[in-house]
Length: 640
Image 1 (tube, helix red, strand yellow):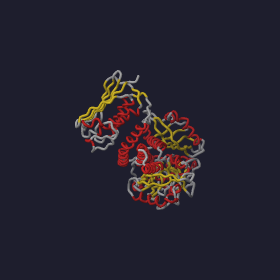
Image 2 (tube, helix red, strand yellow; image 1 turned 30 degrees about the horizontal axis):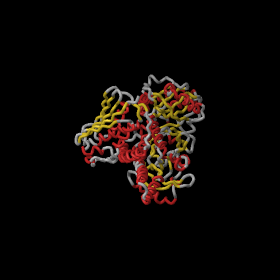
Image 3 (cartoon, helix red, strand yellow; image 1 turned 90 degrees about the vertical axis):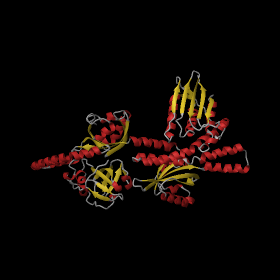
Image 4 (tube, rainbow, N blue to C red; image 1 turned 60 degrees about the horizontal axis):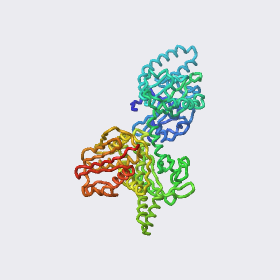
């Protein structure tokens, strides 16, 4: 949120505020906090006077600056506590807005405060005023009445400003009574949940919860209701007016009357739906990638370790988090690794690679290749390293095996097999860059609203690496499987029209020149029985070739024809065509026509097409004219 306050406004509306500069030093503070914490002075570090906590965990300066939820500040020299919400200011400063935590044990006199030390727009001051008023003698009734009238007049003057502040907060601010009925909601409720305030106030809060989370929410609130803890925070699902699920981060405290009886709850609901979705994607990626993904702070201490670390080393993530990387590396390589780290810090962007050993729990050493890059904070300063590592022992063994094969002059078929194995491992290395780029974007998305420039840079890396790997890994390795007869054939029922529409949309998104392949359907569509991978490889290669060899020409076309006993697909382009004298070589491995030598390719695409046409009893027909285009039709029988 973007709210401008003068110093006078801050003192009036938030008399307990703190402004902290990027060095964690107090730059200014509210007039009332100096009474409650008289030792506080500007220019000193904030943790000299307070302890910061979140969910019972003591926070560091870095964690305070990155806090997304309400945090608790405890004064070191007395018992007063504050609850604060963080607002980022220019130049790396933060503004902490909040109030003392009030319960039946709180005392104005004990903390050298009066009702006038609270904001005029704040309910807390009003409640304390009432408590104080009941304790005054009847002889002061007339004076109390005058003060009350003055208080109400001042409250009316600042009500509009207070409402503006509350309604500018992106999080939902709520209050419920003791029975769970909403008594207050700010504008963010309507923005996020789409329900109006009029149709929500007075309704039971749990009617807006996801049905599967009602009991869980009760169980999580129970320790707070039983006063076993002073606040509760958890994640729960709500259901918006349009039926969509909203993940909320709940922070709630109890409200009390002057006798110490519970009157309800007060707190905030933070919409974390996007972070939750991104977190699930990150977990899915981290848990299913064989590479080790790690994040280290600038002192090399691990702050994140993917589950694959356990597979490689035997150490569980919880045994590694917080420990320096050097504890798990070969001492003989410390000098090289330290030099690598320094070069990484000196380079402004991009990945750097290093090959080194990683210790296992048994003391053995595993050879890995690591790709690392720097993560920068919002001020552009290095904050941590993110790395992706993979075992390269198999690749080394393959390299050594090939050398031995070459020396021993073994059979060509064995040499070819080893070569393919080497290629598979060598060409997997660029995937490190892809994984690193994806994880940076995931982390950024979870923590911040990242601008398009950051995403654009990462996507460029992904596009470049995928382009390099597409032909070498997907075609050469797949060709190797074809040669070895290792392709499965798990047929299933496929909605052909829908499947090919999605496949066309996929290839359309890959084009940088704006061209799109259209699909035309003739006859009555019907489902087919085929292995989806077979259909994808066959059709995908035809579409990719149609785009590749017709740049600057009209859009290619895909036609589907359904007949009683067969169906066929035709991919037609208006590109370079195939020289007449070379057509008979089209389905030979590594063949490339003489008129396409300036276009990148490997000559395996049509080999793959023919293979899957043959094993699915398809008949291939090629019609091509050099300079006019190519039309390839594959006809299949309909399985009964």
